[in-house]
Length: 269
Ligand code: DGL
Image (cartoon, rainbow, N blue to C red; front, side, top):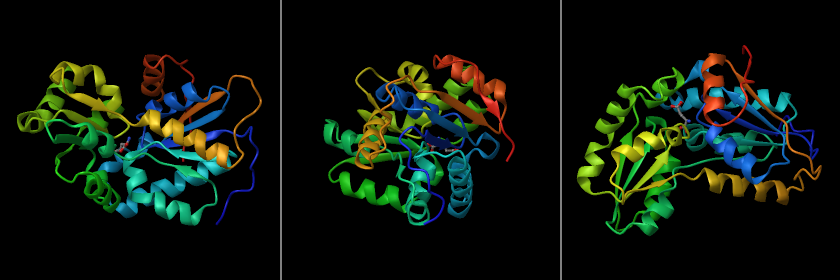
């Protein structure tokens, strides 16, 4: 396996996503591990990944991995369900750096469902992956799983239209079949979708639980760092940087919305 020479515990945790969605994962990691340094790569110029072929998703995932290795990262969080479900196994074969990924959290939703009906909102790339199919099969015995492609949502968020009324209207139309079927859990299977929680809460009946597994990804990140003796023991607050090959103004608006400084940096790949 190539490209992993630095094992320093004070090196940064690298994150990549097709854009800004993975910031929701980074936020959980920073919250749990405040002394870790982080470098976030928003590959917004190539979003959405969900509409790409598996080969296309793998190609972008390799490029992002190489870029983060070039920054000297010690672990990579694939802050994207589409990249995880389509590429993590290959990346683990090809690179020695530890990877942590994110997949739709069907298991807790299925275990806790009383109506025995759960919804999964994810990209086409995630829903069509074999990893998703096997996870879904494993945990959904006796449960009706309603899958819905979140067509167009990533594009609306990446173009800065998160709060636009047309985004809420579109979301409402996407969720209608699930609500008709009586779901009591909605699994957010794309890291962009937790950004839509305020709109989702307006649309969903109160008893429908929203399931987002980014806190679990943060716990897994801590466990993998600890196992590899890579936890930062410096005891000082981490330094965080965000790089985007998309529009830095939109990235900065998102950072501000999430309570961070407007310090996104541009890069061209
Ligand atoms: N945030 C990515 C995910 O979790 C979005 C994929 C896309 O760009 O379509 O799946």
